[in-house]
Length: 196
Image 1 (cartoon, helix red, strand yellow):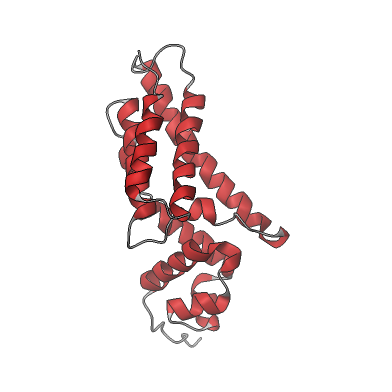
Image 2 (cartoon, rainbow, N blue to C red):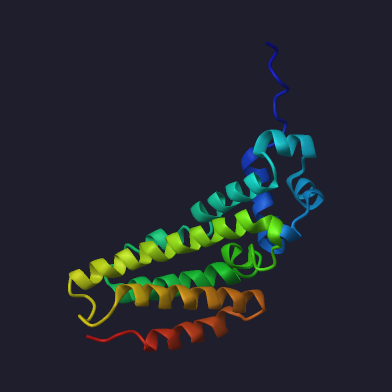
């Protein structure tokens, strides 16, 4: 059996470019011509290397989680629940306002305007958002068990609060809010942190 032609493009670089297009335009807004042009490849190469548009988007989401949003895992290592929340908000703001990235959050914006055909993408994004909330909730459950949170605080509610603020900050960034403006919002949000 003859071997196929070797790829003449950098897969990682092409995936980074696809991530950027999806981040800027959302799943449905990113057309195949947008993607192939940004990636510097033709459609047959895209399909051969990454599968269809849906598979490419999932790979871009994986890249997003190990790249721009990797700060979440680092934040969860902070010694107190308050420090976890503070770092999540501040590093989230840094990410959604970073000049090298499109404004906002891919996971929030990716499916805001999706038709029926994109239902699997909406479900995938929802699954990933819930998984993010679960890891934060587990960290807050640990904090409560260690006595770091008041006994009457519900970790599930606190995790939902933090993720809701994070998503709201991302939406505000996509709408043009500045880093300085968003940091003031994060400071207000942290004033509601439960005290012992």
